[in-house]
Image (cartoon, rainbow, N blue to C red; front, top):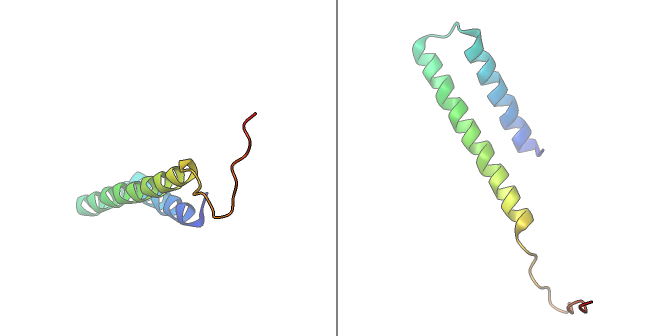
Length: 70
């Protein structure tokens, strides 16, 4: 897991713990829920970028010859 994803995970865990505590005012609870949603979206976007990068073929580099088949 990258450092950015670890930080998002830490912040999401903290927000979830704050929600579980149950001592926040309704407006604060709504803000925490929105923060959780935003953090989860950020994490999903980062994972998506990493996954797409891993699946994309590498570009042909100048001077490289194709490997013989079989």
